[in-house]
Length: 113
Image 1 (cartoon, rainbow, N blue to C red):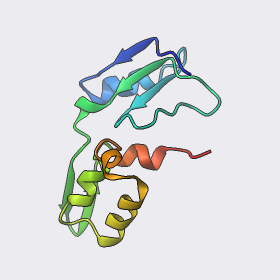
Image 2: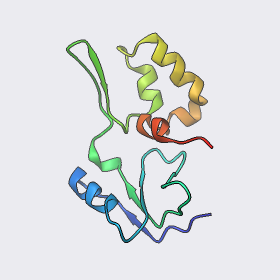
Image 3: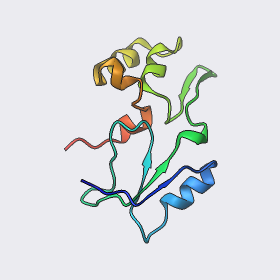
Image 4: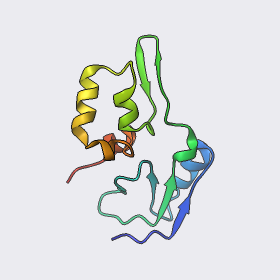
């Protein structure tokens, strides 16, 4: 199990990217917190919490649904403009208790072994 040495909660996307791009420490993003995946075969040393970055909006513009990476699966399921096929897929991904925390970006980015 990983022992996290440091926790960061940046207020801007630029700060988050700077923290995540450092080469001297293995740092991983933390979104919904249902899983914490680093680079395969490495152990994360630091975490960058993305909660303050405003990446959780879901909007409908010009016939397109725009989903922020920090939007939860529950938000996606309950949004009135989410297509039925996407709603069905999100509901199959996890039970409701997990969908309340799991983010779209984290779900897409999770590599299943």
